Amino acid sequence: MLCGIDEAGRGPLAGPLVVAGVILKKEIKELNDSKVLSEKKREALFEPIKEHSYYHIVFISAKTIDKEGLSLCLKNAILEIMKKLKPFAREFLMDGNTSFGIEALDHLIKADALIKEVSAASILAKVSRDRYMCKIAPYYKNYNFEKHKGYGTKAHVEKIKEFGRSDEHRFTFKLKALGESK
Image (cartoon, rainbow, N blue to C red):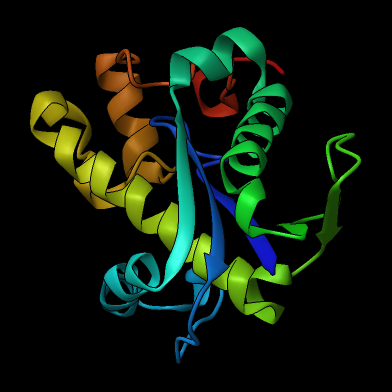
């Protein structure tokens, strides 16, 4: 059986990186890359995916990303997923252009749109991350996380200019709009 792996939250200015691995036990209709599905459709698919798969979801905090770097965080999350789901999988496939030096991991660009297991992982990761950002939004009212989910929208950058970064922000992600250099 194939374990599809994908992430959500690689590029946002705030919030966690979320990586999911999915092995489908039953076919689920209408799977696709989470980025092309509406929020309503992703939410509708979330529980059926969980119900009809072996899965594991890993959250990596902004603080950990700042401390260890994005690539190492991704690699460690993938290794955790592989360890947890190894009893059920013969193959592991990650969406993207790298296997992060992990020998038993294959990778494929656009796998989240082409391979149903990776599509399912994409949906679990995206919905889990979005729900997290909405859950913490009341504690960070100045930032409107429920609207932009931590991504670098113009409105979010304006909030950072006004209030600075919160402890949910990634301090190592430099913003030209704030005069920070890379």
